[in-house]
Every structure is written in C-alpha cells, then in structure tokens.
Amino acid sequence: MPQIEIKSLNAYYDKLHVLKDVDVKVEKGEIISLIGPSGSGKSSLLKMLVGLLVPKSGEVKINNETINYENKKDLRVVREKIGIVFQQYNLFQNMNVLKNVCIAPTKIQKRDPKQAEEQAVELLEKVGLKDKLKSYPDELSGGQQQRVAIARALCLNPQILLLDEVTSALDPELVQEVLDSIRLLASEGMTMLIVSHEMSFVKEVSSKVIFMDNGSIIEVNDPKLIFESPKEKRTSDFVSKILRDK
Image (cartoon, rainbow, N blue to C red; front, side, top):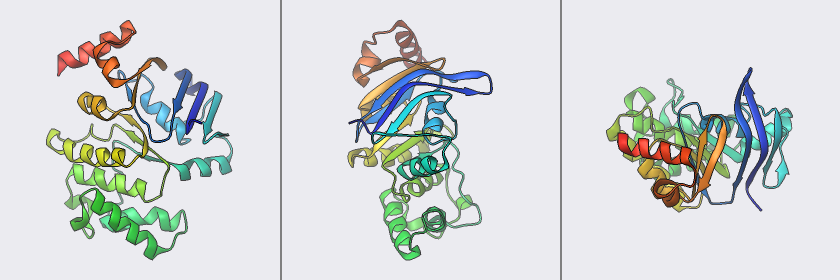
C-alpha cells in the first residue's frame, strides 16, 4: 500500500493550470526527487500535499485515507503527517534556536514542553547544531538556519518530509552541510519528496526521480536511467542541458 497516492490530480493558481492530471505513488521509506525547469509544477505539487494549494479535481490518499483538502479536520491530519521545509527558513528572529524548534510542538500539538525540548535537543544534535541552542537566527549562517528549519519540521514527528529547494538560497560552500543532514534522514528511512537542482545529490540519494514540465509528469524512473538513458526526449533535452551547464 503506497504511503502517498495521487490520481488524476489537477490544480490551478487563479486561471493558471499548474498541475495537470498528475499521478504519483510513494511507498514508505522512498525518497522521490522532483526535477524539471522552473514553473514545471514541482513546488506546486509539494504545496498541494500540505494544503497550501487546493486541488480542483483528482484524488489524494495518505496511508490509504482519501484527503478532502477543503475539510479542516482532514487538513489538520495531513499537517500532522507531513512536514515541509521551504527555500526560505522562516525562523522567528526573536527566539533562539531551541525555542524555534520547540514552539510548534508545544503550541500546535499541545505537547509537554519538557518532552518537546528534549526531542529538540536530540534533533539539533542530529543536524550538527547542538552547540547553537541558545543562538539567535541572525547569529547563524544560511546553512545553519536551514538545518534549524529541518529540525523544526522533524520535531512535529511527521511520517513524510517535503523539502522544497532547501539549498537554492545558500552560498555553494554551505550547501553540503544541509545535504549531509538530508542524507542522514534518508539513511534512517524517512519518506521524503525533494525538489532540488543539485543533480549529483538527486542521483545519489533518490529511490526514484520524477521529471516534470509544464505541470505534467513526463517521466518517472530510477535516477541512473533518468540521467543516463531517459525514455522521453523532453527529459533527455533537460538532463543534457543541465549537465552541460554544470
């Protein structure tokens, strides 16, 4: 049984058709990377999964339960099961690192503050930031802030983690420390959907790669096949250009 199943899904921003008859299956523990040109629908697909974009038609199942994104109860369930980390860190500037990670579990999930803090410390240690608990966001590098954002998402105990271009706002030398944190999560079996332009990382970490263009899924395949012998000409054109431009 897939952990996520999307069938014939369509979604719009106003009149712009951003997701067109999308079908996706994600098994528990899989790491699915979404690649494609800007505006192809990759980030829209992640936003749809957490209810930031409401589908017009089609079906989404999480753990075999159909989700109605216009129902507040269903939306709460989805946001308990799926965490998302964006390109922008969106940390609270007036709170230190530990409080940034603890606030959602205590305020939204009503968890015991001591228990949430213990978990936050463990997660910050996992992403290499145990020495930054009392630091404030403006005292951290971009890579460190993004790792705080990942720890914050994990502190809500999601079953699935969505990562939307989490390295694209970073200086090149800071990218690796964020990718190392994602590698660790991958090794622990976290189900992840990743939108990324880091093609070598995508090839290394992914169970499957989805190539999207103009709101549609063009090809789904193993990373090696996507990058070395894609089935579709549009995929081949994109991959060859990306590799040529590197």
